[in-house]
Image (cartoon, rainbow, N blue to C red; front, side, top):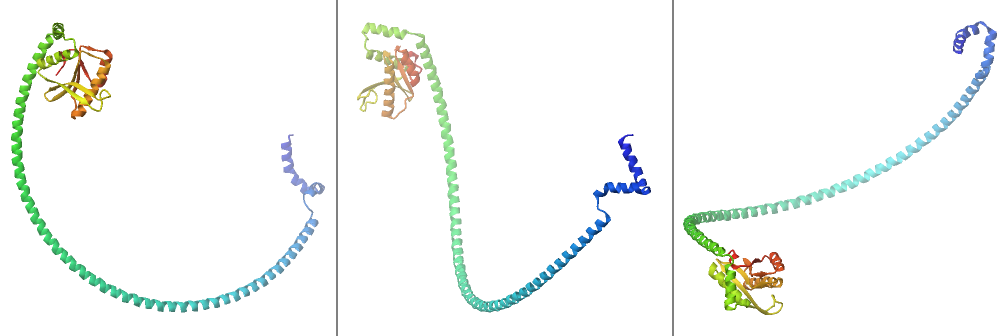
Length: 345
């Protein structure tokens, strides 16, 4: 038989055995006695607990009596202090009432004084209002007069404005007629300019068709007349520009007092081409180096500063231009031409 089955059997049969068998009951009690006290011992312990409770109750009653006695004494002390505080409070209230009465009397006097001052202030205010009303009426009269004057002025201004508008309309009609006349003249001028441009283009086409004839012509002139100097070359090219292109070529010589060009005072020489109001500063030389290009740019700035006029173009006409000089000319905005007929004027 397993333990669980045995345990269940004992639990089921043991109560009946203990009721029927005294010896078994005594044996079980002897086995379990150490787990609980017997009746006599239990009663003895209960009596001791009751005695201890009675002693504790008597001690607590004695303490309660002492606390009650102390509480009564405390209440009497509190009543005495309360009576003293009530007496002090009554005295304080009487003092406060006395001060309040005095304050009320002072307040009544102050109110009477304030009322008197208020009446005086009201009289002054009424007088001031009357003065303000009088001034306001006077101002209104002046404003009405001003408004009448302003209306008259507006009417006068409107009349002048209408007169001005009539004059403006007449002026606009005259201006429109003048613009129509100017447009007619401008169209006539444009027609003549186009005819002139066609003639110039035909001449340029004819000149370009000659190719390098001018170079050979100049060479022949140089061989025939001995044009070996730079001044002769410059004069020959200036003659070609003036004759072939119909432009005015001026050789300008001015003195540089401050030495802005050469770093010291010296004479400055420039070729100036004027065409239809445009200013072209030109350097006509047999050859151009990099330093010559720098000097030419300084000459241009000197001329612009001296005459307070900006050059429209900077031209260099030379059959011999160094490559470094050409590169510098591109940086400075200088146009380089090897032949006079290549110049687009």
